[in-house]
Amino acid sequence: MDHSTEPPEGSQGVASIPQLCCLCGEITRQPVQVDEASSPSGPVPLFACPEDARLFVGQQERAS
Image 1 (tube, rainbow, N blue to C red):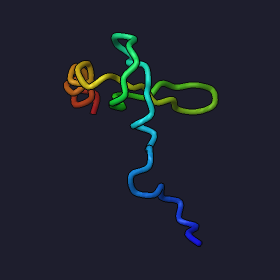
Image 2 (tube, rainbow, N blue to C red):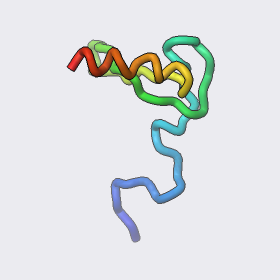
Image 3 (cartoon, rainbow, N blue to C red):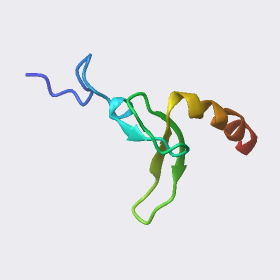
């Protein structure tokens, strides 16, 4: 019996679950986490479609 906390190979990870793009508002099946938003219950990941995720690359480098 396997009690590993890692998902089995080939199973869906969080990033492969369809998400709304935070920029264009379209549902994407290839979400890319681009940022986090603060909420009272903790950080909430923000996702973008692969096309819009390119726009966040420079912003993340400047924020560091």
